[in-house]
Image 1 (cartoon, rainbow, N blue to C red):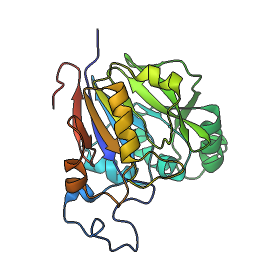
Image 2: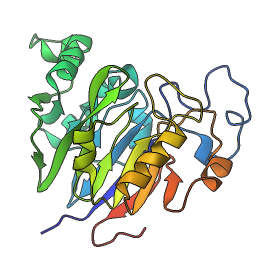
Image 3: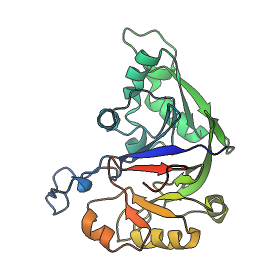
Image 4: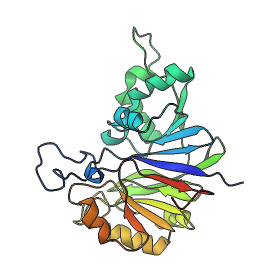
Length: 263
């Protein structure tokens, strides 16, 4: 039986967020709340469970804004700072739940996380509390989390192989400059597809609006949302230029997938 779930966009911005420190462009000064973009992350919620993709430096703010009171698992796309540096902020969930939280990543990503947060994983005694985590390596197979399978989908972030995820009728791909053919085949028949669309101008490690539109045309999901957006794109105007069925994600956006789809 298919699992219905809700996706909450916790952050839709690029690595420095929008507004960007020291910038006074029109988008950074915008009063449209959709132009305020924290670092990129989503939350997948279903049957009382909450699965997080990436712990951004803004995770505390994102969790408070979403009134998140439980966290059951974390999936990591890769180990760049804007995707992992909020990991310590899972501690309050340990306090509440009295259990370890499983985290999933590729061997390369997990190694980088363990080096960065050595104090969490070294097993030594500490005078203060540290996150209680259970590291689990991804091997490319679907990860069954409480009845919903999350399939790691390899994508290229410049020359680096990182991962997006397909889960049920949805897929979340951030920080990609290219999607291999084998991965495109894993993204057929989607209801909802998230794609990196940093800006209009080419970038060596990120997709552009034009390139992501071509990906949508090829895969034909029912709904598509662009994320990891920099301050080159003002929400109202940029979205007005997108094809039918394609929207810009924004912080706080909630999307139903499954029986309640159509939100």
